Length: 133
Image (cartoon, rainbow, N blue to C red; front, side, top):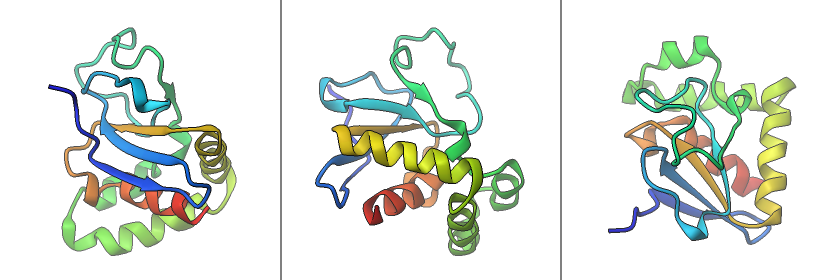
């Protein structure tokens, strides 16, 4: 059975951006595939066929300090999202976000993550940022 995208959004440039788990096999419609987690996924070798064609863009992920503070505590998500947006507004994270925007402008973009709770993860904030363009 083909893996189903967790969430799909159209960017303001009418390109499709999806979030999928990195553990799912690639799909022909994925387009550019980018791992957006700061840490390499547990149990996955760097030569694994599921990530062989994926770029690893760890600069777009939340800082280690923010990630540890958040700890996927649902009660902290709104503050996490606010802090993460601030991180994405400058420096290396801002440049990495712009890189993702460029990839989305060129065609379909699939953001890969190891997280199980996509709506409560940094990928939900990334989708919003890409949508705002």
